[in-house]
Length: 392
Image (tube, rainbow, N blue to C red; front, side):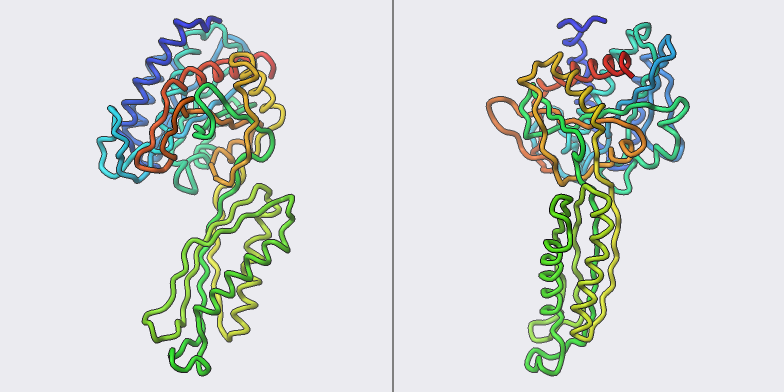
């Protein structure tokens, strides 16, 4: 199977062109209609079986090889973010207030490049490859769970699933791999406190909701350090605290919001119980009540040890050991987690920052990335598929 420089250069040019087209027409989560049309059009050109739905964006390309070998899946997220682009790139967004600020355009283009590569070498595929183009990663509950419900991992059943995500922390030419916990589960909550309130001139006759709310915040933070196993971490961050109607009135209602990040399901189950118990205890002392509205987000992204070793070996083979870094777990969330709950697989970091210089952080209006990184991702992805088809 040839992966000479000419083949890779042609693929890089193709991927860059697709990326520019997608970047200029970004679409928000679960609204990726034009993006889905482009994806399906390209997959059909490659002669792949295309699966899509009337009630949902996204698509799957299925390449059935000549043998009865393993069934491998590769996933890319396709949605953009609600941001006004100011990157100044030649292919800047044409859609006001919408931008590919998280490299999903690059992820999607790379997966189309991988599909093109293997469609031209179908006779060397001894099993089945599914190319999953997933909508809605940026908006929980996300598109992954819906795709799984629609059977993307079945008929035939996928045995291993892989994906990459850009990483500004990794330089162009490098990737980052890590077995086990990779990204955290991401939950959110709203806590509403109600107390008597009163006049600012006579606090002894009423109840200060702001003081009670602040005590709840502090007490929860303290309890997180005492009741959560430190080797199974849970991160709780408060994002908003709204209270009061005037400078001289004690607030009688307080609304507090926050996010919770955990790797372990055991920890994730404990945190809402902790929030409820602590906040009710404090509110009760002030003669108040609390309501907790807790939303479970994506679960943690947990990489399979064997599949991560496969990714590492494939990357070392094509890049060399010096370009394969040990990744650090992050408290960010991603619905790749649902695929990895169903099927053994691995998510890895794709370096996109030039050796000399820096780029704007993801999810900011100036975000862009070094397209020289396409070559690295293509080589690694090709070798991951090749290795998986041989070993699984």
